[in-house]
Image 1 (tube, rainbow, N blue to C red):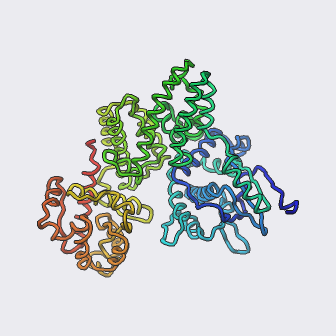
Image 2 (cartoon, rainbow, N blue to C red; image 1 turned 90 degrees about the horizontal axis):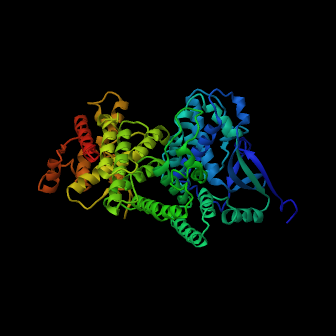
Image 3 (tube, rainbow, N blue to C red; image 1 turned 60 degrees about the vertical axis):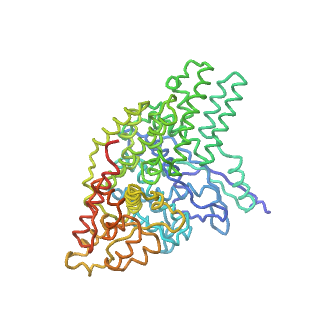
Length: 612
């Protein structure tokens, strides 16, 4: 190995230094882009909160040169054949690229011209290519850059599908207080004040050694580890210190079985749910408060707020009780939520539902934990968790059918206020508060009258159809569940089926304009869920031919057929008991679709009744 190839360079670099006009491949031993919603949300929250801590309304843009820098961690590259490959840091680079694409759309929407493009793609001799140069992802990045949306196709790899999902999450996480004239200040800060350490290796051997070291031994201490250090340093009894250390390690190991960052998510959720009293206002330049500080640096928030945790007397027995009672109780409740998210559990069903369609976990977890008290028995814990999850689901569905955003940034103040309102409440008190909140919502069910599918809400439409289908089947005595229709279980997944084929010519009697036909065709009342394969084979058929196939499908599809209403007492009793206007349709014209739309609305109102 020559002296040059044995060399390793390390320098601090801004995001502009790293991305502006530069190009990177992703090396062969890098895993797929695997960040989840919580990771992208944490990144956006950390960056925007750090900026808002620096910015003061009235600042000039040049004042940003005096703002503190924000350290985003190391990036490792290998230099070979005149180019660079990412060895470590692909998750952050991919996420930053998605974030910059989002910001580019937002700044254009707000009529700014901050020239973010050079950090997203470069132009060499008239050929444009993305700075993160991964051929399999190019189609996704191109569509996101051009239109802000991407619908994955069957040929896409895991990274591409995940990129499309995380791009949607960015819009939900970005705060409202920066969607205005403050945005250019944030863009300046992001480009020039966010710093990474750029580490460059010039040999495969050194590159892999650095990668291995950083992922095995060289990681910075996390907030959880620093909080542990603080607590242990304040326990002077060696036996109690040892017991606490063992308890802490066991808890973190269990949390890490879910994800490597789950310990931090637990502490953020628990501390916010029980102890956070203040939140940053929605005005640019306002300072971070309890909710934000816990979200970014809970290890420093705890020592500053010992009185809230009832630990300000410095008594060993207080700390022991806090760990034995509060910590253990809320840890077990957190595990209960995690398990219910992944397995449809009787009595905790709504936790499963909101994991598929709900608000961000940084909001939902503190909300679900908020009403719990250490004196609650297991049955009471389950009831409270499910009640809050049911409220969250109803809130999210009603916003969605009215095409209203429920991004974390737009509802954070509402939800964090609710955390305080329901903290420590009894079941009856909790029901009353949540019922009042739903009654006070401005989004009414009348939004369902014209609700339909478009390019950006297919996931919600599938969720809605799966809930409706499973509900009427359960009420009719079927053994199927929401998971049957929403998740891929024992076979091919269910897909959205249009009752009308995509043929404007067949509907000229009722529609003068093609756009109007497509609007009605995509209304939710004209949609079903049919298993993949069958759905594709039915695509171009007319309604009369489709109807014979629908008779062998799920109950929502069968309800179109007159035979379903004969000798089927469970189904008949269900729709009579619930006063749902099910009726067969020998033909499916515009008026039939409108009737079906009303039916779906009535089913939705029954599922998500405000009478908690």
